[in-house]
Length: 286
Length: 281
Image 1 (cartoon, each protein chain N blue to C red):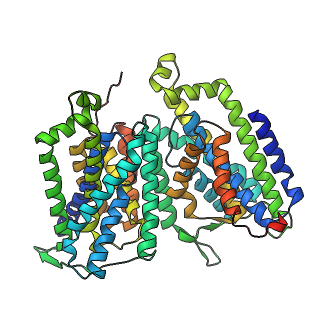
Image 2: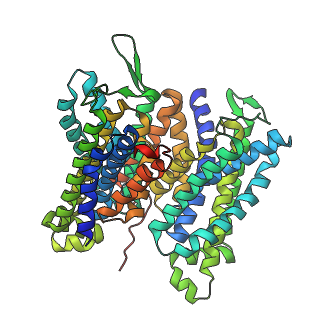
Image 3: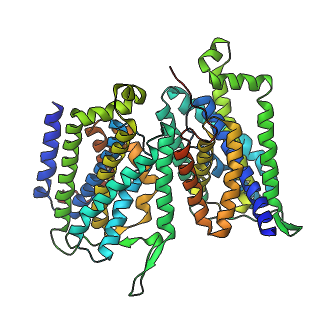
């Protein structure tokens, strides 16, 4: 029983971080209708900045998300304006440009931090409560992820958030109403990048840090978003938690590598039975 | 005009070994031929069939691993090659079946997921031979070559083989684009709903697009594996799938000469610029 509880707790905490990344990705897809392949690079950026702050500068890594988020936001906004805005109309090209950015990002990380695997000390210990070992770092990551996701959903209910939702539903109609859709697209891209960086920053003490560390989380969050139904943020949240729990269970009962295979296989099966994702709607275009 | 240029280029490539037998030159050109064949396979699935496949490396690595496993069992490489190609075709049909009900980004994602599953499985699994060697995992499996590596004509043989198959594939693609099945594939690729309204069957044609694309990619993979003597997990990696995507789009999705040209640029021209022994060329 305590094993199941342990798996559930670890799975929910892992899934919360995965959901944070997935929700950002779903937001970008909802606004821009493109698959953002640079999400993993921003995740890795958050981890590397946390490493630098913690090891090179000696400050507490708990401050790191506060540094990583604005940095990633700024980089995301600059990247969007320079590289994505000119080709906004061609979706395939935008996907390719974000892919190019992620490859370039990996190489930049390799130049700046070297190709070796880095690891940083954990600032918070693991405690035991009621037979369940909880890593406080993982708990902190999960709680912050939940708080940010809740803030995001609440933010979409405000006046600004409504404008964002309108721009996602019908860009041309929103423009006719005077909403600056271009600015919203840039800001949302920056926001999603910041969320990915925060996710990477929070989980940095838990993984080894290396230049290509962003690929796995990116594929997983992409798969979570697609399974939930592209653009459906609530479904991305639910699917993220579900995938987190199941991946933890598979990792425990089989082996760590098989959890990745399991997540991918689950996505293939889900899409085979429900071609538009679990909660996606068929969009009729005329 | 363009066909004259292509004909001249093909003739020049055929005559090139008569001028220089430099192994470095033959090597990078052979690798370029195989890369071009691989990218043409992606171009068939995506440029003609309209299915932006994100897992083309599965064809490349799958055929390579099949060659490795068959030659490990004792089958001579010449007999293993057709079986590996048939296996690649089968893999393509399976991927096509898995994605036949999906559209757009979902197709890319499912094909990517299937290739990644194969990649992870290749990294995790290994076998131990009766002699006590442990094969598989990161190091990959050895593959017997069609022509022995020690033979003097190893490089020339592989050069001409890969070039001939590349030109055959290119000619086949050009003929396909003008043929009725090719037009059906193009129709499904451009507008599925309209194609269905005209009476075509999008799932069947999408499966066919994947199958044919994987056949070409698998040919490249099988030849590459026997040329290098190794079938490694890197032949199933995400980078390779993305390389096919990028090169084909860069060269011109849907054309035949474009992706091949992009593959030559990246595989032969840029590495060749590092060649310092000009007097041999």
